[in-house]
Image 1 (cartoon, rainbow, N blue to C red):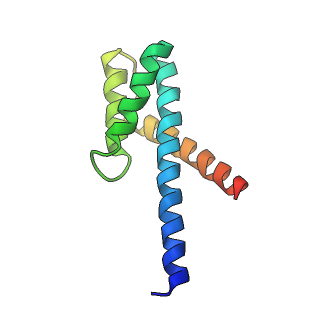
Image 2: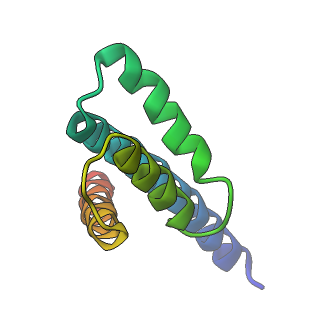
Amino acid sequence: MAVMEMERIEVETRMSGQVTARRNYLLAIWAGRELGLTERELSGFIEAVMQSDFEEPGPHDVIRTLQAEFDIRGLTTQPCQLLDKLKSIENNVRAELHMTD
């Protein structure tokens, strides 16, 4: 594999990690506000959501974490709604990153 190709793959991998981390952060802020968390609660919640992403590949671990919190508080939401919000935030993050390149 050519050096330039390896460098491209490394940059894409790094960028993908940045997108995922920012997406999870913004999604946790959105969900925390929907859940009515205080600023103090929100900080720990964001950390828990971001940590949950390391349980398995893909976004489903994050969605399960959020769904559990909505269920605990008796707020009605469906996993597909949370996934739609996740995708929307991810698209916005990708657009932001491309604007700064």
